[in-house]
Length: 338
Image 1 (cartoon, one colour):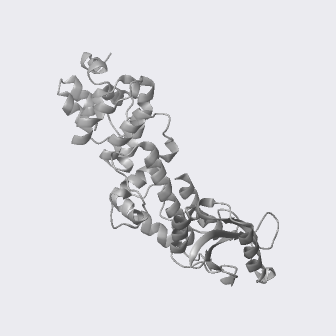
Image 2 (image 1 turned 135 degrees about the vertical axis):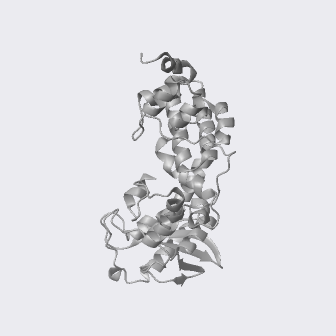
Image 3 (image 1 turned 45 degrees about the vertical axis):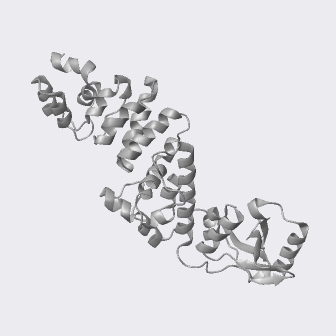
């Protein structure tokens, strides 16, 4: 109603019209409005509004909230049009994902998430976006602590399910380091020993736990929080130097005395009765009444501050900010939100 050239934007550049009608926080649209009314080129008006020209490809249905700043690099300009959703209903979610991934990681990741969302729109959990973006970003940062913890780094040709699995494996390693820190576990409750042909060896630091997880194909890397809250300890059972089982010692229910919680072979296979008997004999060699097994209230065990800062500092510096969802001080709530 203000001017025909503004009305023309509904067909020529819906994103620009939307940005003027529903301006984002901190953006004054007056200068851009004047630019459009004066008949200046669309590219000049888009620059005034901090909108990339590739947004011209999007229909009006893509916009249901103020448009955050988006990158306009050559990669996005050339490739983003190949990965537009067919259904207009998917457009707002698609645009939000592209915007978030570009801001949290980089432009190649934004093109990748656009493609993967189109392939499987229901497979992407929006709550995993921060984790995925961090894993993608650190995949390109060799030499960083966060990169060293990645088993499988991101590549642009990865499918979403493989990327989520790799990101979750990375999170498990992060959680283990943040729970245990760089020092050995102070109190393993029990002493190493030998019963018959079997040796019981403590998994008393991160490297021991990771080696056991890889050799035995199990998930003991996820037990960091249980150990930090004084709920369990992990042991390796070996025969002739070969790993035959992984043993978890803990406290069951209201029983205050340490007991066998899990005893499993490679790949979580069932172990023979003989091994259970041997494990019980080894356990009974200790004065179980003297073992302090008082649990720490869940989520109250502190995370390792040095590991937290070493992990996230490169990201903070690269993005030139410390976001609320990744604070300077280690918080279990922030870790859980990933």
